[in-house]
Length: 107
Image 1 (tube, helix red, strand yellow):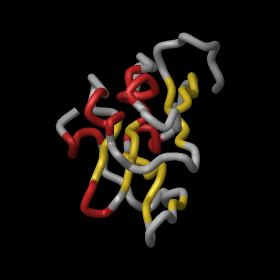
Image 2: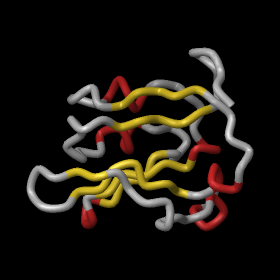
Image 3: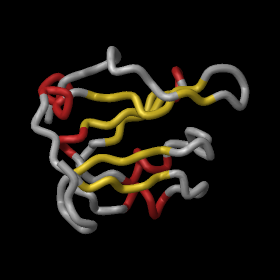
Image 4: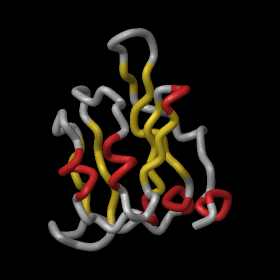
């Protein structure tokens, strides 16, 4: 369910300019963004995102867009891969089968 800008719930979108520097992960105060540099991957646990915008502000490529909304599905509690690196310069959207629940992450 979409919410107006500034709402304290939602997720983020990552565009193709992302270099997986993971600056957004470092700035996320709730741990909603997860980075795995060894696998060149960025994921989000939507239920933990408070739409503070620190991730978007920290991104040197301006690749992060806040998407306010409510998600009552079980998927909101699991890590969803936003972007994953392949070969050099290759980025592809992640699949929903790579998940880790918020309780498994200690949230």
